[in-house]
Length: 259
Image (cartoon, rainbow, N blue to C red; front, side, top):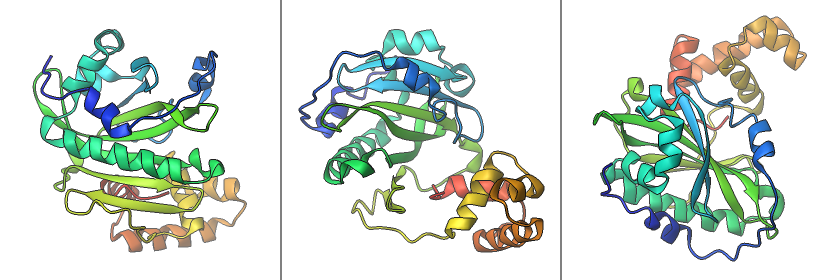
């Protein structure tokens, strides 16, 4: 495995955290979390659970061999060597920098907001066969210690090479409690809130569209008329400047859209 990256740089970016972790079996709650099941992923995906208190990868789900060529066993067995080999070296400093900013942000917000904060990365990754692919990593805190500091994270990895994104690496930090998001790239590293393109109702409809539901199913789920859903869908397509749901999903992923 290629070890150009240093696994410990991730923990240097996180900074010293005074964790208070009581012994408990949290694996069942992770397995029951719908996020781990790829709920927010469109396309081939896998997920690995990282514990930054123990510095271990603890669980892998999804089709990792399809996405990057490694089996679940290989990922868990190699642990830090997998992380070092997986991330494309030129993108690694950006990723560690964003991790540091995200941890400072999450430690600064009230406790009732912490579980609503997560980061979505779009960057290059190394496939086991030596090729370089473009991936989306939804980095989501799952378990918090007694002081409400996150220490177990889901990393949902989706192959988005087909989107042909040019501005890499980039990331978006979300705070869904405040309905805020911050777009970050190599030229813009400040946490400045970005404006939402879609209304709250349009976001609700988008979440249902991503799940593959049609207008009739959405109208029933949201208890609104079929024609209202159709009108919202037309407005959504117009705002995104696309002509189909397929193009819309591509737009959402390319732009790390807050929904």
